[in-house]
Length: 108
Length: 118
Image (cartoon, rainbow over all chains, first blue to last red; front, side):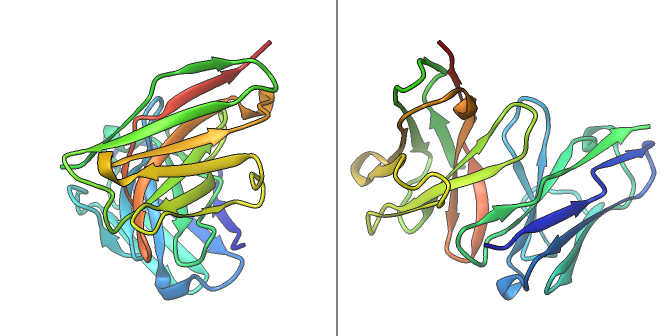
């Protein structure tokens, strides 16, 4: 199965700052079928980015995704208070679907 | 707008089984995949298995193979995940999520907390 490794584990930033999250795959992700999810405490994950770079419905344009093959990035251009959460990458191109271990974006 | 509604929290004894349901409202599972994902306390997301309801085909993570059964009822747009031989390590929130081949999981249930304790 494809192993996804996210870095850093925790990102401490202030509102208004830029967040850059990384996701590296152990092998190439088929058709760049890479998604990012946001999860807040006590809530289910919410789809943010799919296809490596497409924003899901209702996701503001401060969120952007990039990358291909084995290296992917989620960027939040200017952090809003509601963006502080845990973010997971997921590859859905090859079964089994696998998740990264998550990056926590916390308020500095 | 599709909503996935899961059954309520469960407390189980070690060695027993649990069956969690997931029902779609405002839509169906037709042409979709229902994935089951769990999250242990303070931990990340772990894919357990999936079912394609229209084909009634289920696939499972090797980790849970032989211990988990995923089924679906097309007539009621419901899916079920049954996990057997529970141990304390199965204490987790269990989620269902709607996906498709080559598509991400766009709708998630609210989660079902399963606590395994003697």
